[in-house]
Amino acid sequence: MPVERIDIAHFRNITEASLTLAPHLTLVVGANGQGKTNLLEALYVILQGRDFRVASERDAIQLHESVATLTAEGRLGDHPVKWRHAIQRQPLRRLHSGPVVPVVLFSPEDVTLAKGSPEVRRRFLDLLLAPHDPHYARSLKAYHRVLLQRNRALKEAQYHGLIDDFTPLLIREGTYIWRRRSEAFQELLALAKPLHHELAGGEDLTASYHFGGAAHPVAGEETYRAEMQRRRPDEIVRQVTLVGPHRDDLEFFLNGQPAAGFASQGQLRTIALSLKLATYDWLAKETGMTPVVLLDDVLSELDSARRSRLLELVAQPGQQTLVTDTEARNFEALTPLIYHVGNGVITPWER
Image (cartoon, rainbow, N blue to C red):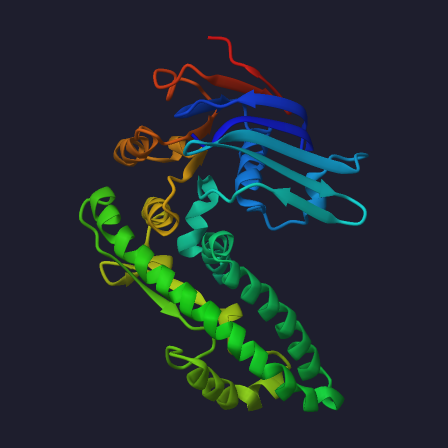
């Protein structure tokens, strides 16, 4: 199993905690707002080397503390491994050691994948790709750095001569980002369609990938360059870069109808659940490793059919899963290892 033990110090509302994790299912119970999600976040950060939350990492360090530290021990195959992740306040630094392990996180906010802002869907793909594709991670960082510089040049007439200096690098990095995102999404969709059909009683899920600001799909750098030239007059007027992966979006359809406009809350959640289940299969194939599954208070919002499908995933042999819930009864029969979280204090749960 990947993680046998995790130690947490001064992370979010958890001052100190040491937990042994089960090889299959570990349950964490407690009222809302007590620190259950913070525990899942700590394990996610340990295995991925980065956070899934968008706020500053400095916010993860407890007030009046200079550093938050996460350590873990486990095994990958027959090899013992150790992880260490530290976040320093001043100057802000992130130090990480240990192998990247695929993680699939299910949370109540997943419904925004189908109806939330485009940024949510772009981040979904970025968090999927970046930990396992160093080229993608570098391209994403370089792209946003150059995008910021190009936008500054667009805002000031005296710097318009610099726009063409930034454009080639933007096109090079953006083309790779577009290619990897679109490939991964088509693979995910192929996996998600049969899962959704099963969960939703026959509803047909389809989707479109919208290349941000482009009139046509971007096949390569030449197409990208032509689209940027086409939009240049508009960019000068609006003083912002109008073409590129920073404007990408995904659109989902149920039986041919746009989900964002017509789907119920339950249907939107089923789309998100299908995508996350597909992500599990995609990561297993892409990395050759069994992903760790983190379930954050999601069962209460699922009907019995969807809950059963999710529990099938949890019960797979060799599958390590950490589940949070407000009550133990949903999982009590499945695992002997249950913890309670109250105000950031984690203790063994008393049956």
